[in-house]
Image (tube, rainbow, N blue to C red; front, top):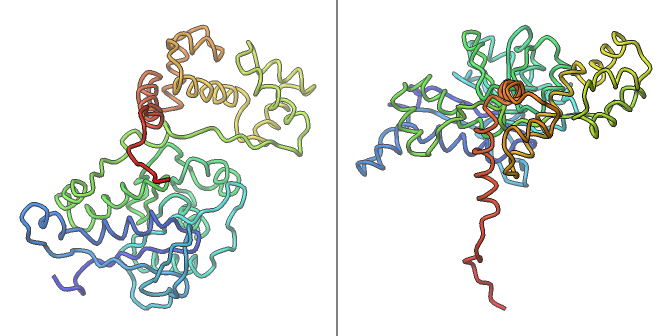
Length: 351
């Protein structure tokens, strides 16, 4: 297969991009068709994808961690790719990137109009939001950007539970969640352009299994304090210490001195949550922390966070987290055990 006949996939990067995403994608996509055959027969196959790194001006730069990047081309290249991956471009959850990437935004609009499949990883979805490609559509990014999307891009239906959002695939738009979701996006692109067999073979080479549970088990409630609304801020502080209390919303309303309807409206405006949803999210977060480190029974955890009915707690937990409390405990206590593995280091340092 000649290079001219290969699907062209460009990886759009910037100084705010993670090296793990950029070079991970590059290695996996470039290996498609070649490495698996080499591993099982000793005879490399043909590379099936033309993979190139692209940046605004095409000049060398350093990405996050001061890792050098030498793009293959800049946005002025006339070649329209078959697919674009907008790599993650880190920004604070409080720093909306409006107007920060004008050249990239204009180029993405152009290549999408010319028929390219436009995809993103993690915060790369923010560039697609800036282009307008996500308006009226579903999309995902890292769960930490949920509030930013809801506040600043209200025309987008943010899917914070999704690892790979394919609902807009027919519109040539695909978004992936957190930084490690590039694994799932890479396998999707290989299947899309090279077929499922090559996708499976590549997954076997790199031991990629995907994130079948979605993002929800990993997400954490973000709670920005609203300094511009004194009564609501006061209630946020109070509920953080009193989330197990009975009738917590009624007590917050009474504490605020507002009528229930006004309180609900101002609370949602300040936090992005309805009051009861906020309380539930707090309780689930506390339950998750207990499950990660403690051996209390699920019923005891339920009671500790304010639920007398363990069945109701299990339903709420499953709805918010995507897995049962028992499954969550198994998943994260294993990580905790690995992190705290006992035994002396095998590395000896000379005096």
